[in-house]
Image 1 (cartoon, one colour):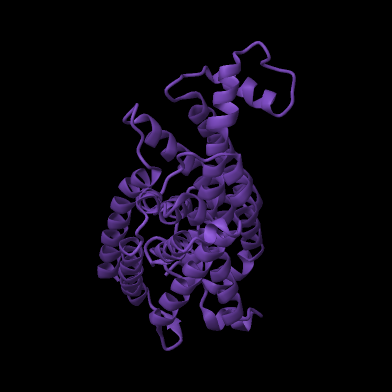
Image 2 (cartoon, helix red, strand yellow):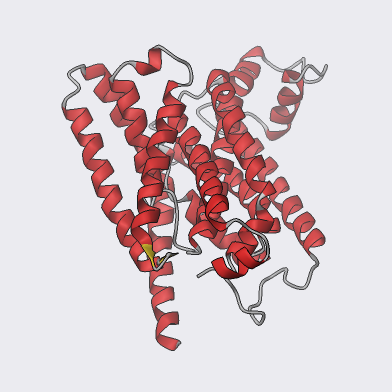
Length: 359
């Protein structure tokens, strides 16, 4: 359960909500800016950090950095910067979606990749690619990913209910089952797709990565992802009340069923939009909200905006590591997030088991 006792201590617990939000948002915004500059400066061609800032401002139309080489301008503003911005948007969407799903299920171990939502979105996207729907309509891929993610989330939610309440253990078991089922569906689609080029593209996409992202991908993912993240921020009061239990939330004026369904839909739309562009990048929705919850506490008025900023910075740094670790080869960022997230998930399982033994 996510509800915390009054005696729980957090790093910024002594600060009022407004100051806590300002403090964590300022720190994360600076971290995000640093991640942007570090990522844009490093690669096969290293560009000085000061030049990166000048070239970015030049790309915005300012008369600055005009004496720098045009090749630097092309590398920063046409190759690296759009990839970084796509990573920011996707990281914010996945972290916010993960935090919201944890609030909806009242389970700190819930995450789109763990309970099957990400794999469900991936199945919808793979079906859209294999059937040729992607070439017929611009929004076919995001729509298919959303339908797959939402269907999986609803199935997991229904399966986890006991006496009208979602149970943490049942939720994880249902998520494992749905991950296996959706994974089998993806394997079947790959098996029956006879076009080798499409199979190769889907296999590369299924690892999850930001390679080849440009301004067109940013234009496709930013509107739905940022819109859903913004709308989720409006529901922070309702999420806080849901953490107190359904009966308490109902008595305080929350339509529990409708609110839970709306939040689940928003989280799945954000996840589906991210998956449709970058593939199933896992564990961001688990790691980022968990770490930030230790700093700011469980209040979603602070946690949700912080998760969006933290997720953006985390994915940009992870993608930078994916590009630099094995130069000139490049890892998919989904490998990096899995290497970080899987041990973190196991650590949480062990810690929660120890906490249950002490109760």
